[in-house]
Length: 159
Ligand code: HEM
Image (spheres, protein in one colour):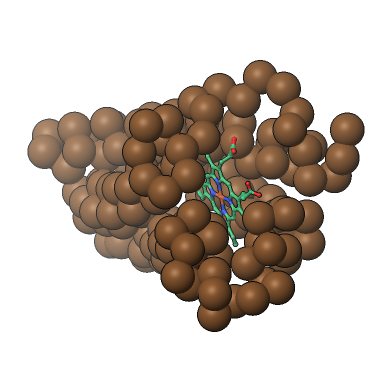
């Protein structure tokens, strides 16, 4: 059991908290936007759980990126060369940059929800910002069978 293994395991599973909280926020947001429903506490809670779970991913991701990941240590040992390798470039640049943009969108969205003057406005902002954020996340997760370095859907053991 290594710090790398534990961090990667947590990062792998917290992805599901991100996906579930996104769904629990987006479905009521689009319905509320279309129907003019009231923005209630339950919606605020799911929205903050989405923002929190992406923030946890940011912290775990930064730990993997800067400290624990042997893949990143290999990339940092020759960064120029890593840019020519699809797998190393995916982890060193693509995954990290897209995920940081997605986490930033979640935070900006949460601020804009608070500022929106009407309930319709809150639903609209939630749907647009969190929708864009989760689209970027879904496109940047290394799903099985896709991309440069596919990973398991459910990591059942520490690497
Ligand atoms: C919502 C945001 C994020 C999600 C959903 C996410 C998701 C994932 C997933 C599913 C994996 C594969 C885990 C496995 O192998 O089982 C992974 C690996 C990784 N992620 Fe993220 N990630 C996010 C943000 C970030 C950020 C912001 C960074 C960097 C600053 C980052 C850096 C990494 C690294 C370095 C690896 C592993 C490379 C290795 O195998 O050593 N992630 N991420």
